[in-house]
Image (tube, rainbow, N blue to C red; front, side, top):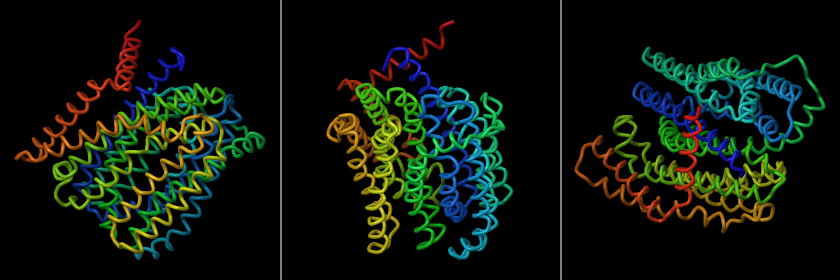
Length: 486
C-alpha cells in the first residue's frame, strides 16, 4: 500500500472505528437501560421478527451496495438505478410481510406478532436509501460524515426506545428504537452526503449491477438465513424467554465484533478494490487486515468471555444471568470472524462473486447438518450454540481455500498470521480468570479484571514485538499529526 494511500486508509479506518465504537457504545448503554426495563420475553418477540426483517433487508441492501463499491467507475445512472431497484424490492417485500404476518404469528402461537411485524417492516424503506448512501460514503471514504450521522441517529433512537420502555410499552419500545434509528440515519445522510436520487434509470446499468450483485445477494441471503435460523428454531422449539437469553448473550460479542472488525472491513473493501488487478498488493493489504483485526478482536473476545458473569450481573441484573453461558460460547464463535471477512472481502474486491457464492453453498450445507444434529440429538440451546462454533471453525478452512490459488495466501499462512494474537489472548484469558477469584464485589472485581487483561496483553505484545502493535501505533501517530497540521 502506497504511503499516501496508506495514510488515507488509516485516517478513514480511524474515523470508521471511532464511528463504530461511539455508536456501538451508545447502543450498548441504551441496551443496558432497556434490558433493565424490559423482560426476556420482550426481546424474544423482537428476535423472532428480526429473522424475517433481516432476510428482507438482504434483498433491499445487499449485492447492489457491494457492486457499487467494487466498480472502478460509477456515475449517477448507476446510483439512481440501484436506488430504484432497492426501493422496488422494499415495496414488494413489505407487501409480502404484511400479508404473511398473521400466518407467522400463528406458526409461533403468538398472534401479537402480526401487528408488530407490519409496523417493524417499514424499516425496509429507509434501507433503499442507505444501500446507495453507504456505497457513496465508502467510495469517497467520507467516514467522518458517517460517524457523526450514525452517532446522532443512535442517540435519538435510544432516547425514543428508553422513553417508550419507561411508559410500559414493552416490545414496542424495541420496535420504535429500530425504526427511528434507520429513519434518522437516512435523513441525516441525505443532508450530509452530496447525493440525491434523480429521475434517471438505465436497464443496462441495472443489469450490470445485478449481474455482479445477484451472486452476492444470494450469498448474503444464505448467510443471513443461516445465522437467523438458529433464532427461528430456538423460538419455535423452546420459548420467547429462552430466545431472549440467547439473543442477549449474542449481542455482547456481536457488538464488539461489529465495532472493531466491521470498521476495518468497511474501509478495506474500497482499498482492496483499488488493488484488484495487483495480486501481490492485494495479498499485502489482506494480510494487514487479518493481522490488525485479529490483534484487536481476539483479546476483546477472550476478555469478554472471562468477565461475563460479573459484567452481566452488574449491568443487566441477576434476571439476565442465564445468558452468561451463551455469551461465553458466542465469544469463541465471533473471535474468528476477522479471518473469514478478510478472505471474503478479497474475493469481493476481485469481482469473484461466483466463488463467493460457491463457498456459501458449501458452508451452509454442512452448517444445516450440524444445526439439525444439535437440535434433534441434544435438545438444548447450549448445544445449538456450540454447533455454531463448530461451523465457524470449519468455515475458516473453506473461506481460505480459494485465496491459496488466487493470491498465494493459503490457510497455513493465514494461521501463522493469526497465531501470535491468539496465543497472547489465551494467556490474557487465563490471567483475567485468575483475577476473577479475588474476593471483591462486582464493580471492583470487573475493574480489576479489565486492568489485568489490558496490562497482560499490552505487555506481551510489546515484549514479543508484535508487528500489528507497531503498525497501529505508527498509523495513529501519523493520523493525529495530519489532523493537527494546518
